[in-house]
Length: 298
Length: 280
Image (cartoon, rainbow over all chains, first blue to last red; front, top):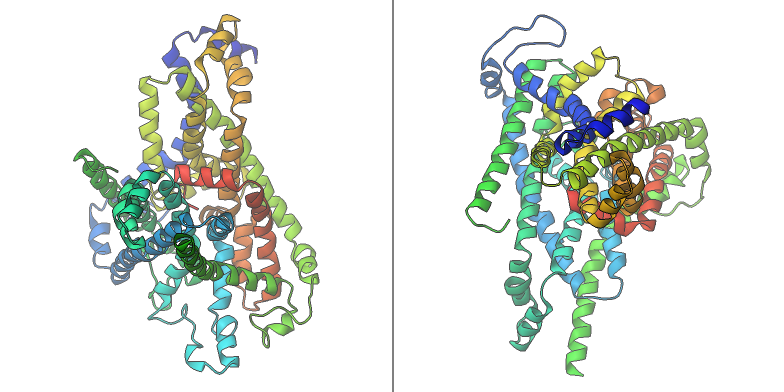
């Protein structure tokens, strides 16, 4: 302790001593995030397999990627995923938050229930729905027992529905988060505006459209941004529920990258996928940032 | 009177829709709870309902035979280790950014660095990190995973703690300096004791993130002995002989500690999770 104390005493320069306190966080963050990220951005121009010789191959990985049928499928699925999350959970969350502001009783109960799946582990949420959507057990077994055989299908193992079923489970877990941030914003809306709307004889929908929604627009745009960004690395639910199957019908970019990286050890190829994800996220951030510069309230 | 009844009617309408939405959440969770106390042979005839015979032994089986006692300890060690490292490092950094040099160049640079860090998808760095960890012999160790979790949660923790410390009255620090306190003492005697509420919030959110974390747990720990509960449940689910009674009981055991914490500290959880926007 003594030499440390001595050092601190003599760090009279504020700037210097402030760096001293910052050092531990910066060091571990650089080790875990910055250095590997930069390595990845370098390795995406190589054909490294993790242990052999590293050969520079230029843009070959990217050329190969855009020729890869599975990767193209994964990108389309990520776009569908983003579009789904930008619509269905947002609509339900806006509705639930708006309805919640209209009631007093049981409000905390509903808030608790809606938010609850958000604190559950992805593995637990997946177990719940893997069972319910199981080809033999769960809802299939239930529908068969009451004679509704037409409903007794397994959405996770059917090619046409697997992506939507996975997105449903992730959305089921996620939408309560939106409810909570929307309701927080809605409570900051000026009460006088609602009273004025009441005097004008506004309907519920009109109040939502002309008072609530314009007031929570910054929070709404924030939720838009985080959904777009969080949809890029969406992994847990796909990997656990379907691993991208059947026949790549629920493959997404993060899962594709994971298998290239840890099953096939294609370091260069997988790094190229990571680099593209990174570029996309920063393109989105830059887009929102320039909207803000243009005077949009974000 | 007319206004009152109109309002009541509207409230009932609200409750009907909200209740339907709530049931979509509650019913699947109930099925999990029922399954956790259902005998394995009953799954064929009673897939969703309350068990005809309640079998609490599922929990005993999972805890003892399924070795979940040990697995829970693994997860608890990871959470405790990450809390110790992450909160210590983050509070030092937050103190620096909020108290030592609130308007300095370092604050802006670190702010930008951590924000960029938060937005990088894990897929960009997980593979080189895996190779670095392999060479440092940190794969398959708690220390390796604790360092990763601490680093990943640090940006959020720094922001949250800083936003609290920056509101502390400047006079307290000035008075301590007049009394001859060193910089370290300013941190340990003034900043830390006054900031405990934000440590509760940050600690809860970090614990939640670590307890539930899946991607890094599955990637970095392959030794069954060291696996935390999330990756053990994954390997259990993927076995051919699906024993739903046992897996359900184990899942409930995984969820229960967090559910209790969430009931006790709902406000802190929600404030913490919605302020930083961490991925859950």
